[in-house]
Amino acid sequence: SCMLDKTRAQTFDGKDYPLRLGPCWHAVMTTYPRINPDNHNEKLHIPKDKSVSVLSRENEAGQKEVKVLLGSDKIKFVPGTTSQPEVFVNGEKIVVSRNKAYQKVEENEIIFEIYKMGDRFIGLTSDKFDV
Image 1 (cartoon, rainbow, N blue to C red):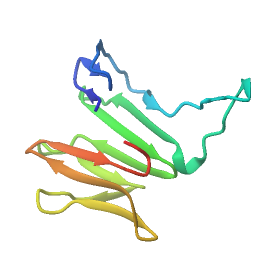
Image 2: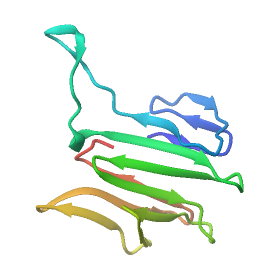
Image 3: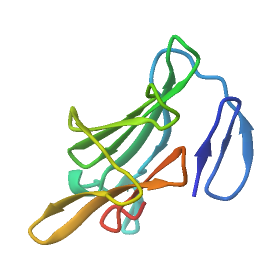
Image 4: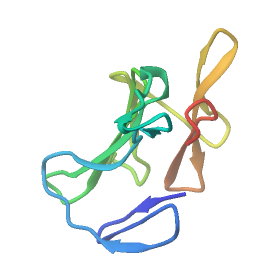
């Protein structure tokens, strides 16, 4: 897993980096096209339904906002009035609790799931996008 907090980012391989974000969106993670094994000068196309990006920025109060792009879906996590972030999926506010997760399902396949972790954290997972 990876993690962002007020002053640092921890990468998937467990390395920590100092982090200072401003008001514009910064790419934290994105899919990167592989090199074509038959032509090393060519990068393979990433289909839209396999494309993943994670963006983050700091709001006026110095809190982080996170936007996750999974294919054509946009999931946004913004600081809420409580200790738990507010979550928007494609512009629509959703609510998750210890007893209720949110699932995006298409053709009987779970595309992604958003769920509560402890008292203050929200998790996002997707087998389809391998995140």
